[in-house]
Each structure stands twice: as structure tokens, then as C-alpha cells.
Length: 424
Image 1 (cartoon, rainbow, N blue to C red):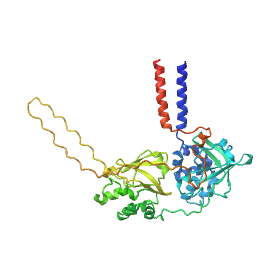
Image 2 (image 1 turned 90 degrees about the horizontal axis):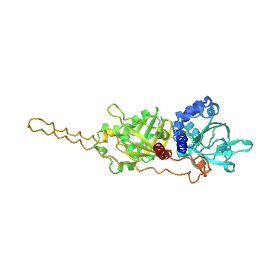
Image 3 (image 1 turned 120 degrees about the vertical axis):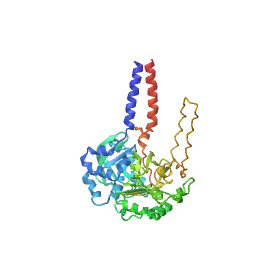
Image 4 (image 1 turned 135 degrees about the vertical axis):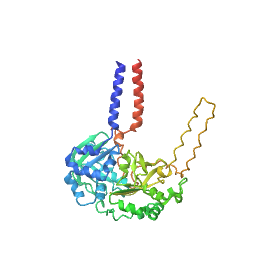
């Protein structure tokens, strides 16, 4: 009976752990609430839904369709994305925690703070427990008012995601007044040169690829630009040996049709086609993510996503640490098939040896893999100390662990115990 109890306990533990590590989907959560349909739609248009789904601990402050129209009716999609990013809090807040805030008020980090476009503390929100059971929300900028208030709880999956309705948008100074670049006005080469990608900028101009980029940008474009150091790295192939067509394919390989921000890259499991993709070759790459670190894998080399140059729907530009080398141009040729064994014959006639297999030409060298990303930590030095994503765990709540490793260990222990029960 004791063995049976142990077995049942392990099964229940596994089920509980599975509930913790299961991914959430904000689109599915909000689909059951028609009053937030516009909010849900704009999360998809801006690809913020992918960023939300890629994070383990998060709180979404949603607005009703009527409240959201104050932003969407007057501003372009790029500004709407900033406003929505300020409503995505990188911590877990449920109704109970809102009314148990230490000292009655706290500043919490939002997704807007992680973009690098929020100077000082403009990417933080002020959450204050007011008298009479009310909770106010506002910008953390000095002098800002609590213009929004808590309305109701929508959905919680403790302690991964919480969805709370608030009464009005949270607007930090300059959020709605900053000019938003339009796709037709963006100067790609100027942005690349300023970001330290002068060599790449020069190549796309001299090869004519810049015209392809400019044509594609209105419908959506994402660029992965190698920095100048990437072209000087050891093992980088000699681009002067490429034909013009090969060089064009290489440069187009560094671009993707459509708006693909970092959050979308982190949640993408399938190979991603590039502008170089055609009937003659796949010219695709795969993506892996470890926390906030994103790495692109071509099959020849790997490159770390370094910095965001611009993220303004429908286009985005990132810098990468290494040249992206497609297998179609730089991949190793397959090894020749082994020679067939000689056929034995009853006659004493000698067996002819197979003809030698000619060696394939040596492919151009590939650049070494990029070093692993060191995730920057914490808020900026001049920003107030905000509650971290793991603050719930520090306060005694259910915290997060690296679920895959724990799950593997727990499964191993479970298998061992169950096996011993069976043997006994």
C-alpha cells in the first residue's frame, strides 16, 4: 500500500508540474472576451502576442474596445505598439497581490522598458493601492497622475500570466507625440551606417539589393545586418570570389519578407524563408532562443542577434554578430558514396577496382559560431528599482524554475521508483 501511495504521489506531482510549465497563449485567452477583441487584434498586428507568449511571468493590462479607441483612432501602428508595450508588466499581479503591495505603491517594469526607447523610468508603471479598495495605475515619470484604475480580473494562470482590465491607457511623457517613421520615408542605409554596419550598407547599394529592400518594405521587411567586425572575423569567406548572382543571394539571405520582431523570432520553431529563397534553393535558417537570447542557425554557422536598430511595424532591423552563410553557397558537399564491394565470381578472372571518385571542390570557409549572449541584467542605473519577474517567489509565492531540467530529473526519479515498485 505504501508503494501505491508513493506512485500516486509522483503522478500527481508530474501533473502539477506539467500545469506550471505549460505555455500560455494570450490570443486564445482573450478570444473568449469580445469586449477585448480590438485589443487582441492589435496584439496580433504588432506581434506583441508572440512576445507575451515567450515569457514565463507576465501581467497584461487590457483595455475594453471603447477605451482602446482613444489610441488606435489617432495614431499609427508603431505608436499603438509602444502604448500597448507599456501595458505589459514583467511581473505577476493578481487581485490579491494588488492589494498587498509593500508600502502601498510600487514601480514595475514593462515591456516598453526593454525596447531601449524608454529613457530613464518612462518604461515603468506606478501601481498604487488607494483607499477604499481601489488600485491606480500611471506612468512612473515624476509628476505623472494615476489616470487609470483597476476594473476587474479577467484571467489568471498562477503564477505565469495574469490578465487584468484597467479603465484607461497609461501614457508616459512623449509616448504619443514622438514622430513615427513611415515605411516609405525610412532610410535603410543611414540606419545601417549609424548602427555600425557600413560594410553591409555599402554592399547592398553596390549590388542593387537596396532596391529590393525598398520595394518590400511597404508590405513588411526584417533585416539581419552583420556589423563591420563580422566581415573581418577569422574564417569569413572572400566575397570577391563570388559571382554577382551569388553575392545578391547572400545579401538577400539576410532579409525576411514580413514584420518579424524579436518576440516572434523567439517563438518560431519552423525554418524561416528569406528573400533569397527560390526554386533552386531553400535559403532558410532556424532560430533558437534561451531566455532573451536569440541565435540564428544557417546550417553552416550560427549568429547571435545583437541589437535592435529599429522596430516600427511593418519593418524591423537587427544587427547580428556574424555573417549568415547559407548552405546553398557555403555548405559542405556530401561525402562520396562508399565504393561497392567486388563481386565474387566462380571464374578466376580478376575483379576490376571501382573508378576513383573525384573530390568535390572545397567550399568557401565559414565564420565561427557567435559567442553566447550574456543577458543584460536589471533596470537602467538611473531608473528606480522595480519589482523583478521573480519577486513573487521571493515573497513566498510560487516561483519559476527551469522547467525542462526539473521535469527531466523528476521523470527520471519517477521511472526509477515505479520500476522498483513493479519489481517488488
